[in-house]
Length: 231
Length: 371
Image (tube, rainbow over the protein chains, first blue to last red):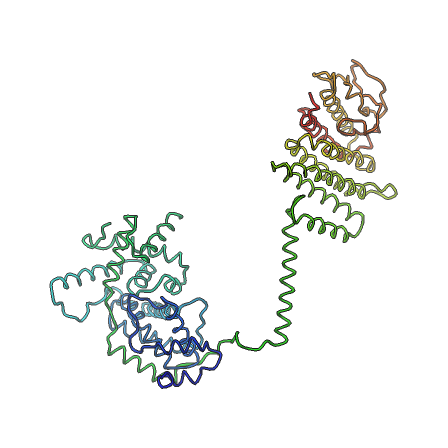
């Protein structure tokens, strides 16, 4: 079964790979589903082993393995980009650029304590920086980067109010400093763990804990009073 | 800083455990974070998602560059070179363990398990000493180590530790005598002034340390303490005897000797039976104890007999054997020019100053000989 689904992977199963972990990983692969946004990648050992095996295959040029890594991380990367740039179209463009760049560089990927998802998020973050550095975009910076409303039609007054609340919330996020904004988006909108966020921001986990606390405190001051959390 | 770190950890714990936190502010921030989490409903459009995947897979042949395979660290037969490396590693580990034991034994005191290791290490060090000068200095260094052990043991209250103070002090005296003999004892060779200064510095330092240690000594330590004090005083005498060229300003030396004599006479007057309590040294009337002291005059000539109430007090010059002194051997009568600059501070520190601060007054007080 595994051979039928992944002939290239089977062909390169000889050492140097962790064969047992790879077989376990390939047996558990569910293509096209990704993972729950509330369950950050790398949250359990089995998932980590699977990702590890796929990355090792992708490093050898295995396109299907890279495709499965894409399935796992595309939502996380897209969500991070979307809540950072506030545009669905731009988020899709940057998501494409992120995975193209990752596909070119995955052969040189070394773990060095860095989660693969954090590595992708780092690429995405750099792309955002490059995007805003371009002269063309500098002229457009006055535009609000609060995410657009979703395409779904508001079917009730409650949903409309909820969308308005979300809009105010995301507007408050856009007023944070760049690093605090990154931290908030990675941690609570993209669902990244402390370790992944620390790796993506190139900070220690302790520093990220303090950063997220400061960011949330500032965010609580920025949101409208009706959205301000009550103890 | 600490409070911020604690708050950050409290939030992280509350967010991770999903339990209601005790702190109200943390609870509010957790609620805000949950609100954020709920608001994150963005998903990539399915058409975009599938389309991008297909594009990536299609472009992989031209885009993906295979990296070097990861090194295999398991499942390979061990090569001879690797086996040798493992043996070398084992040898290094054993060496490190030995070095670690030796290093750990540096702080051992008599009675400790590692103390024999420490003594063995010191013996090896002495074996590798190149000449008498190096060996002598090594002995003095090790004497300082013995004194340090006595200081450690003196701070311990158990009886076993108390009994080991004396052995440490005896070992101190042995090492100090051997070291000074090697550095100063050679009458057939020219004494290096730096060696004399080295011994003087050792004696001065040891005097201060022994003085501080005396407060923690008991009567059971009296014999070893007396011997240690006597050894230090002998060092001062030896320095002045073998190194006359160390002498600097003759007048100043003579003045130092006079002050020294005053201190000695007062100290021994207070310490001996029937001593006068006031100005004994200044009047030059020695007590019985002081009468046993060997002293020297300002001009270097013996001033015999009791000078009584003469206006120019001169100490007695009849010098009994050093061994007959109650605590310490005093310098024998000799011309003042034979006493080097290094002698005065050393012996002065041993015998005490005008304020009765010195080793001898302390010894007398601790051992109950000073009244």
